[in-house]
Image 1: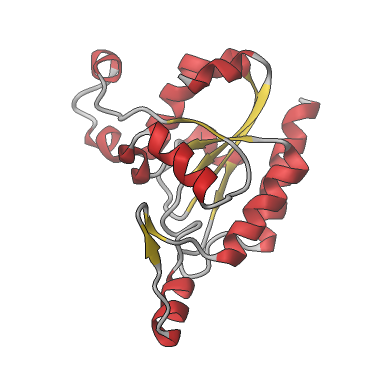
Image 2 (image 1 turned 60 degrees about the horizontal axis):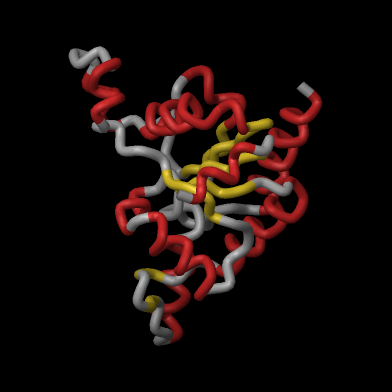
Length: 180
């Protein structure tokens, strides 16, 4: 598994896809122009959002952990997609499903929010791999993060995905982590 790369201290970007790279703006543009907007992996990503992701990766050196529902395609498929589409950065892992055995053994099963909260999946990943993490940021269009993750979280607008301002916020978060 590619998470062996986390043995060295790394910055991690937890990345959602729908509403972050896969945007409403790009779908509308392709529809209006009659352009095919998919390949064997699914919808093609908004080139403006991808450019902003490239800036984050280039300036921070962060590795990517997919926290999106696209993770159900499997890590190897996502790695292949990243390569085939020449996307920026390197996908090293996916977050676990919150209903994993480990999660269920330790969860308050009466707290139903746990079963739909991406923040818990990120927390579980960090618990398993945190010793190798220098700092992290989360990019998502939905507010499903835990209170302790708010300082690491940048929420995108699903219409446009990652903006230059979002990229700057993520870069600042990851730069602060190094100083901490």
